[in-house]
Length: 281
Length: 281
Image (cartoon, rainbow over all chains, first blue to last red):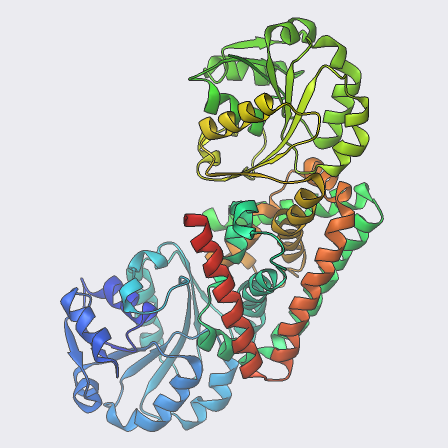
């Protein structure tokens, strides 16, 4: 199948690599360097800087752009695509698209909303690597307009890319849970680095725990500021809930309350172990 | 050299493995299973369940017990050791020992306080692995009573174990910075798991970011409740400072303030990259 990639960054490049053995990959990007790099490294089969040409070549297109850019791109360029083209977007936010994008989408285009829960703290096609998808979680957010065939096609792509679980969610459920599992997680990592007073040379006094918790603070700030603000209605309550949880620990520590502290830790440990177990199954 | 290990758990076992090629390792533990396992797996050269025998065989002893147990052990058993024995403790807290242990220590024993900043979220000698020390940070907290020869001996052990940096700190400085780099980090991980409302099957919607941030929530609650409470004077202000940092993010998100959010993220990213760079050097 001819598969198009719009936006040849870390995610677009990784998807191209993951699918290139079974499909003919054509990429479109405004960045000539990224296209040339991907051609030279055989990440893609064909490149295009002309959207009209590109759009006529592909039946399926992965939109690998920042969330706000996806909306702008579709509004500005959807006329270029043939009828029945399947557009697959991969952003970390969904209700915004339901509100700001679907009403403007051509009736003969099918937009399938997905969230491959994978990535790395790097930017650009040079860091693309299909192994980031291996055994990870993939979410599909179907709408009434998606045909069963196109949803199944996307599931097949997810399996080909190596994802371990594929789950359907409503747009609201997606944004609610991602606020916790992904967005809160990134905010905590950033705030932890921010809380360093640099009174000491931090690097000499850290272990893997600090390294792991702050790794995702090496963030793509353009992407993540978009995501966090777009989902603020779900994220703010989760930040508050986290502060409540943290305050329970703070109170127990302040009151020398070993018993409460041990109970809290035991519960957290059990919950985390059960997640680990779920992941392996 | 005959090196003793008191407490053959994850840390004691890993130290034994790391030093066994150059030294004769004798372990003492009240847990017969742990000793037998370590003998069977050639982690130690000799085992002892009789402290008097053990103490006469070793010139240097690693105390690999929980912080409070170190104090109790020394108070109860220090008469067993020969004059000039070097005791090396490895706990994650120091001012407590200065106050509650050093005044009670026999004048002819030398206690060197250290903190190997390494570990894993497992318990017991079965999970011991000397690679956990590889290129990690090692802290020595010298006191006026330590002889230069004994401090140099401990540095040599740290190098033999594979540590990447060795830094001297005062007891107060140690407890101040560890409150941030290690203890706050563990509390955040626990509170993040605690903030899950289990409204969804979490395992299906997490990525490596959530896995990495919550890994250390699989905690040894006996050890860590000791550590956190012993260091509450330094830890509570760092929790408050973290909540301030988190609130800056919350405010920016709530106010749709992309500019502030991007600035905060850029600063955190730069800081984290500079730590990464420091670590590699």
